Image (tube, rainbow over all chains, first blue to last red; front, side, top):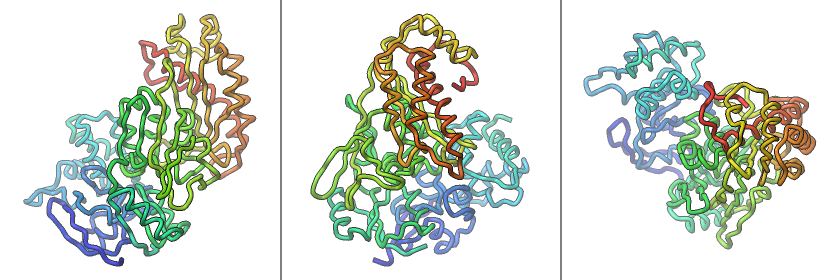
Length: 156
Length: 323
């Protein structure tokens, strides 16, 4: 079987890429497509650093088979800026509220927050905490992260 | 990671034929949140993965007198189903604390029970809800009750080439409530130290002391008061996870309560009997004595939560009472 060609939408653009069938989505993104904004933390689906959006929903790309993205819509952290390169409001808020320390959890955290707000534009603090429960930050910056998300939802 | 070929059949027939062709070399993959991790950890070494994602009809929740859940239904879909939350509450409880949203968006209920971890969150709700598992292979289709599905840690009745086609859950009797409690150390991304599900069908949903459910009265006081109403337990099912090599029903405990009026003394004996039926072990997440103690506590608490769900007192306690 060996190599397969996958066609999908990546950050709004159609892509076609040849891949080995055993790769994860994370390997496809980082190693084949050189989009290194998506991070590998635990590699086992527990830390959320590798979070990307698949058809608008968060998935852990480190345990997601690349083969399953054929025909789907994938958004990575690189896809959040607009055409002029301006940061997404969530990214601006993360900067403004000091929600970024080492930054390793940030791409996944921002995408988890985006997915949360897309579904629920005015989440309660409890819902924000629940929404980012799958993303570990080891700099213990959760308070600032929660504030940044609440700010974007117009609640600060 | 070990290399493997990956097939995406687009019909059940094609999938089963492919599996028959590769046999022991092949594994099914649903969401992959267990399979890919096991391959990374080298505890599973398939040459071929056969994906069930592309097969139409396996990812639907339908209700037509019986609740039908396709094996490819994700935990997140169940979490968002109002019908399941209302009438099959224990299952809704279980999926909302499983993994993280990232996991629940991908992980499927079929995968959760096929992995057959003693800690599988959906297993004990499916046990108390009386689930029938429809199994399909190239040659035949058979249905087994979920009690007979689990054979040991990681082992099920599925033979090579068989797959789950559907989970069928009968509509509960009137005045039924069910609840699941996941005893865990943190509220996300944890496996249960213990999982306890209870389902109760009562003969009425009006009691004179319903307002007591909205207070902080001790369970024993509420039950003493309820004894005056003579509430009969028409049906009861109790299931325990991480309490034995497989998720299990506590049938002796259920037998004590079935057909009897609810009382504090009886619920105490039911919980104690469930403890005696369990065979918990010492493990990294919890020791056997602790699991036994908590079975005693949680069986009673989940019975109370089920009662609360039947009676639906008008006022609610905020934050929600932790039974």
